[in-house]
Image (cartoon, rainbow, N blue to C red; front, side, top):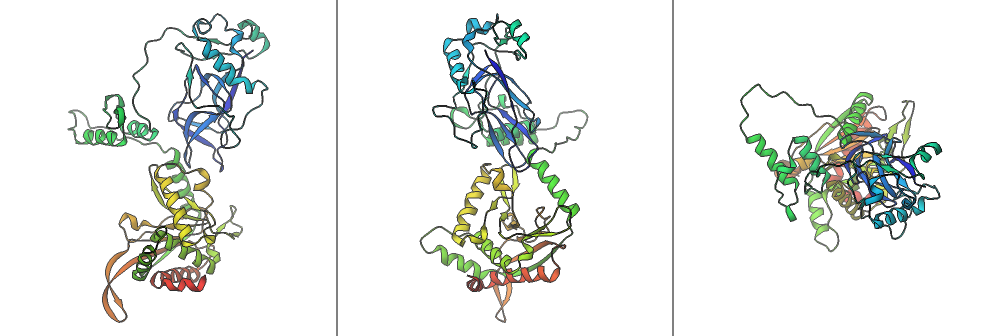
Length: 457
């Protein structure tokens, strides 16, 4: 006797309360396997695929693309159990191929004991389960009427699941778009994907195709008539989480900023020397990260955070170094765990890995949380200075501007040197200006004379 199981949006970790539907990966009436991804959602931390622990026929799904779903709310329902028992007077029983019924029975065999399977990533997937989707042999419109009690099951006939499948017109043409980010960009910019010719393989629509269509819309003359009304872009997903976090930081933390110019000529010379030897290349960011870990060992009060109720200061024993990275979803802050225990080369490797993951939108929630100090290299945007908002609940952030040739007094003479501006924003509750100034001056000295780091090793 088929049983309809309800799969609710699981807790995706790190205290997240909900997620936005980006793309449905299954349709109502589709036969799915255990642990098959059914929907792609965007949380405040990352875009993830959510697998369903049940195998069988999808009978309903909840939420449209762009809609927010709370953790614990229904996501999909799946009819599990042997479908050979028959379908009560339904067209599916007459027209669905035997192979589909067999596949459904096989997919739900492990669920017959009515024990929920763990999601992929939290347990071991059953061997032989593939991600290929199979579809019931007739078009399905509407939802599956599943028995909810013994009486209802008897009325349906042998406990079968009745599927309403009235005649429906042919569905819309399939738009050759794979990336959910491209779909979202098109939706936000009002671009009709069906009207685009993709430049990718086999006509695949790429992000560049959508951007060209947007540019063409902007360049096109406005039609005669009343002026267009201003649009409102809703705060969702990552942007919403960032807005809430920055607002809280600005509201709760009494932040102050100090800055200093530093001669980075010797630091850049050291980098060229290191990269002239065999081995992985060392980035400027890796050198700055190493300087930060050494500076925090000297000024440990800056590797801290104020408790939620403001009654105390938590001193962190480990340095989990966050750094600003630009990805397709906007600016994110990946975290290098235990940065204080890593060499400069190891820091460079981890920074590079997390940067690539950020660009590809592949960072996990765990890689975006838990930082204790942030390094912000805004020099990559071609600017010299900034007064950033602290990454709540952290107490400090070091900002680094562009490194550019400037006139500088060196050894009593005017010379052209590679100069950068360092800014340091800190929570005034955890320290006074003397501590903050001492930290920033030590960092600047290490930038100007990187050999000082040898004293700390």
